[in-house]
Length: 161
Image (tube, rainbow, N blue to C red; front, side, top):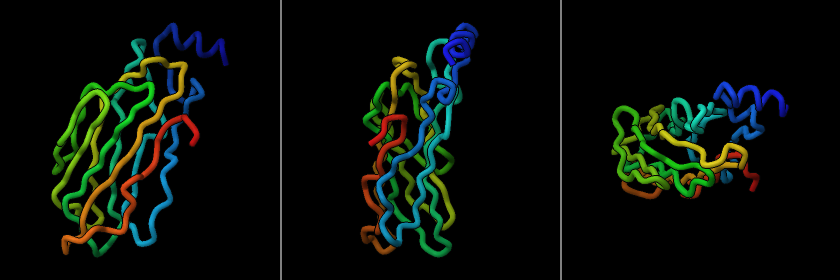
């Protein structure tokens, strides 16, 4: 493993899984009746300067066939060993907060079977250390009531909680 990492490091194409840093969402348990699914990258590739190639894509997917939601937002925050440089929303969404530590995407209406998300350009401060980010999701039902989904959606990364 060390030889492979050294050889790939010389070329400048290390992937997170090759480094032993494969990420998996350790999301909080989903509330009963919550049709929202959080999508996160399974792996990513680093270039020679520790930048994430292609960025990190995080999205919310409405699995409901009947319900739509209003004022839905996804916040990616508290990065450990990652620094955000830029965030781009998916079509129909808007970035409402963009810093080196927080990125928030918002959509007015998350339609049935619809998605909203963002792609975050980032770099790792140290490719040998573990990484993670935290998710927060907010929204309302079409009748302006709070939905049945937890606000705290857990963590994504290589650090076990």
